[in-house]
Length: 115
Image (cartoon, rainbow, N blue to C red; front, side, top):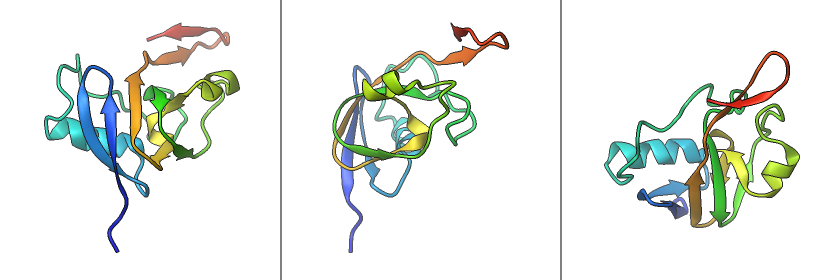
């Protein structure tokens, strides 16, 4: 039986494919490696790959996905409800439309600052 394949579109940069069993970050890295995501100012931001660092923030603008837990230090419940998630923590369940978000970091004093 073939795995379900979905189109992953990154606003202004192109599209690739992803599978329900793979992390979205892996699908995006593959698409970038094959040249399907053009005009990115740099390589996709990648950090811990398990939802703890907040580097791979994206906004899901359309489509369905399932997710693993994400650090609330990097994605608040309100942000998650509005579609901001970590690419390393979600798996597509349909075609997805995305927008890259600037990564943030939490300083020692608890304040949030852009990287």
